[in-house]
Image (tube, rainbow, N blue to C red; front, side, top):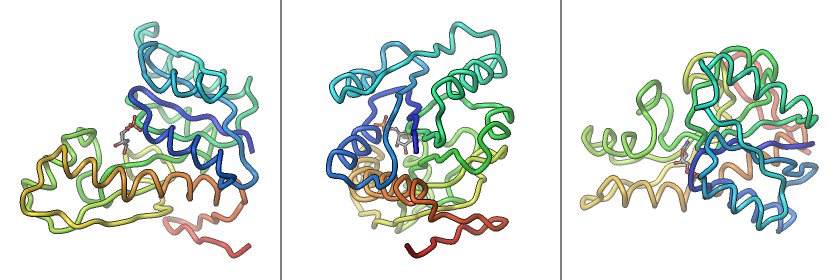
Length: 208
Ligand code: GRF
């Protein structure tokens, strides 16, 4: 399957996908494009180093999220993309995107959904909220994107302990290293092998 990874920033999750692909772990899939919402995203350099075509759809060039989503859908269709991966993509897409790619958009969220998720829960805020709440476990979730923010069917989750001296930055790093960078390539590979079956809210992982 042809995969597009949508990014806005540093791109460590993109890097995890590139590395997994290099190890032959993305079975039946290949990263065909990286699309950034900002021309300055370091993720674009990572794509270039890996020989993957990079494109910019700059949110500042569009009057609305709706117009930007339409441009994005056009580009993804032109590129014949079958799986869209949101890896730190900071623009909220409109329903057009979900309609164009039903159960074919994966997002990674740095908490155990439904905790610390939804509008306003992104980046370091997520970890600040988890620490302020005093949870003893947090982690990451890969889910299919539905019209509801962070509300689509859950594909994979992984937890880590929250330690007494954690700062938001320290917790963020632990969750990236131990959860996000492992879960995202796993979920992408399962999708590319047609091993994810969605029934309502439940995602079943099919045996090979
Ligand atoms: C990650 O924490 C991811 O969970 C969230 O955005 C961040 C992106 O980081 N959706 P990076 O650009 O992949 O380094």
